[in-house]
Image (cartoon, rainbow, N blue to C red; front, side):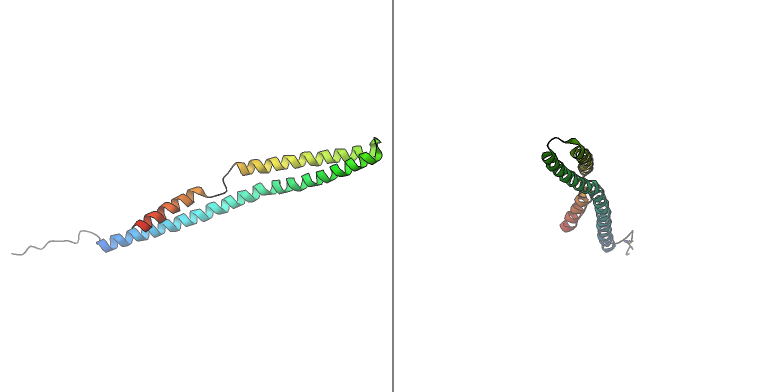
Length: 133
């Protein structure tokens, strides 16, 4: 007498493999999205750190211009104070302001890594896993 064996206990091999592949693809899509979001955030921080750095450079250049004008007037007036003292004060203010802005921008750049390391490493691991299977 033949006995009927029920082999339909769950999903077949094909559906399991298909599910694993779909899960892997979904994971890669999620990591690409995370990579994109992290890259956008890092670009925003880079932009925010660049603004005072650029402004500081411009202000320092203006300060350097006034320093040269001040030196020229000082030499031409040979110790007559009224004109060059005024220029020296303005130059000093611009230089101090420029140095402060450059230091602020540099400290913002040093506070973070502009590359999305975490997302990139996770994506790399998943691509390696996907190529092994």
